[in-house]
View 1 (tube, rainbow, N blue to C red):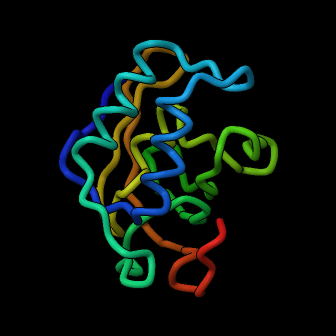
View 2 (view 1 turned 180 degrees about the vertical axis):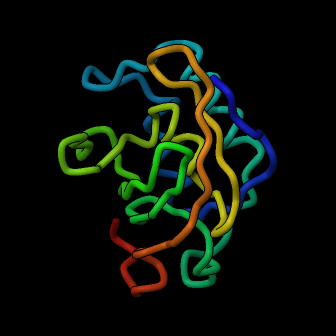
Length: 139
């Protein structure tokens, strides 16, 4: 799974929720070991911010983004696994694309390995909705 493991900004609330999902065995969430390891690494490197002070150009949980890739634009919402619905554009944060988007910034190029084994890339062209910018701290 290709991923730029630079330090990312996450709200402390997203960090706590995601850490709990990754580090607490749950019957409903079974991450492949490589995905769990990568998620742990992203969380360990993250700079935690107060959700009320999250910059509006950072992708957070529940954010809706427009990506531009070589094969065209797409819109996705970064979701918790239980809320992921690919047919609605809601991708799991623990998918390869989801992990590459978590904490990414507007204008940043993200990379991920698709199910086909190929590396894909896209630019975060627009942040259409970010819960923190909208005053929503429950997502």
